[in-house]
Image 1 (cartoon, rainbow, N blue to C red):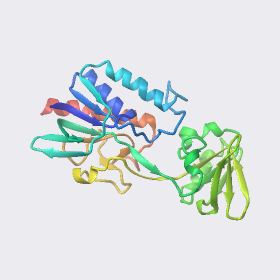
Image 2 (image 1 turned 180 degrees about the vertical axis):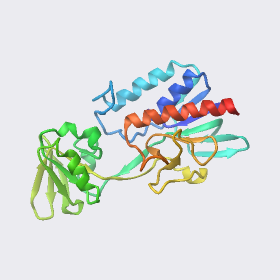
Image 3 (image 1 turned 120 degrees about the vertical axis):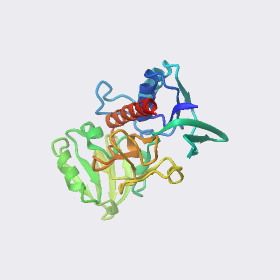
Image 4 (image 1 turned 135 degrees about the vertical axis):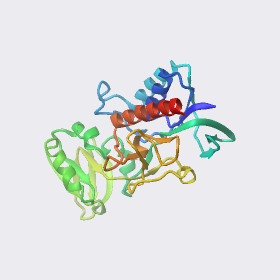
Length: 277
């Protein structure tokens, strides 16, 4: 029986594993190998690691976690999580594993606007977060391909960064193509808008298909409802990273720094629950 099973090997899950390992708690980290930023070549706005390849960040994190003998890492995906008696059971294929606590760090899957060519540029010249990717287009024009009420606010955020900010209705874009130094947005009026990069507002869904069976409460955002320490509505089940939406925040915080912080806080709460129990 494990003290904790962490489902997800991104920044939040790795930080939770590191914290639990340092407290000598028997921990299993399950890493499916699927990551939200899998197409991103450079991660930004993370102190001491600004511009580093996210894959390299994960490699370094796994190496650091592996130094703690109480943490086991398996390259596998969980298919179900259920409560049985006083423990939680995690299914990995035909194998059933028991733990005092489960930390959900599976992240989410982005669903982009249905514009041909957009997928190929996602994570490079097409992004969603101005804090993570805005500076890379400094002094050049950008497009905000976003029909929501937030588009104008996003434009004002990027105004000091970009030379020009174009607000573009997604319905007016028929194709996105890469150019030598940016993007070409072909539009329904036969015009072509050339920019250095574009920002879109993807929808997203949980990567954890077992949430419904587990019974955790969700926020209106669709993310898992948590307290500031990642506790969910199900006892000894925690949610961290992009999957989590704490009550004190307006929505889930999609950033590496926030993911690391949430992983550490949930691990601290797990240790506290083991002591109290």
